[in-house]
Amino acid sequence: NAGVTQTPKFQVLKTGQSMTLQCAQDMNHNSMYWYRQDPGMGLRLIYYSASEGTTDKGEVPNGYNVSRLNKREFSLRLESAAPSQTSVYFCASSAGGVNIQYFGAGTRLSVL
Amino acid sequence: GIQVEQSPPDLILQEGANSTLRCNFSDSVNNLQWFHQNPWGQLINLFYIPSGTKQNGRLSATTVATERYSLLYISSSQTTDSGVYFCAVGGGSYIPTFGRGTSLIVHP
Image 1 (tube, each protein chain N blue to C red):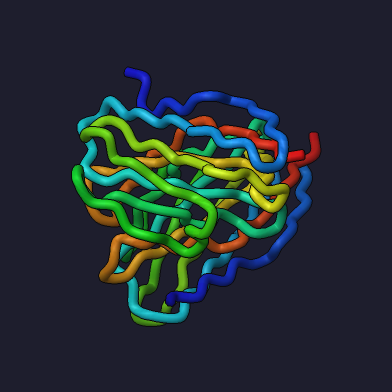
Image 2 (tube, rainbow over the protein chains, first blue to last red; image 1 turned 45 degrees about the vertical axis):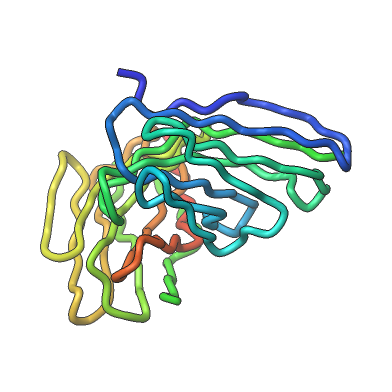
């Protein structure tokens, strides 16, 4: 049972490049989330998907887009990466609403 | 939105010591979770505790929702307890708010 799987684990981009972070869960969860973690800031919600077919903005959505591809997969896209997007990105899922969340291992992204 | 404050921000212990971490929140919540982030960055859910008391081995947690705080107790700390402890709370929406965490270092 893999839980929540994120790819890639590490990525270096140049300013202006685009990329998609992938997330998949195998727990049949309804809700999925994307967070970013910066030093001293805790985790901040970028986007979430309460259920398949819906997505909503979180606290820091600017510069990002998401796609809930199906119940298992929730991707995060950076269309034109900026140095301010250097961070560690976490995907999480939960059965529904804000109950127990399970996190992926994270993607460490550097934008030069 | 809900404000979450965790204290202390940093904590250094000798192995075997006990500690209490606190999470204060600004509004009524119906969800509260405690997480441990290990030194490799992995986030593990410790407790889902919107109210009441739970225990899991050397760790226990208490949430007093009416007074808007939660406490995480670590007894007989071990070096493997090192890392950052986060509290995350949620109200009626799907948007959980994380505190900034308590960084714990346990020395052998």
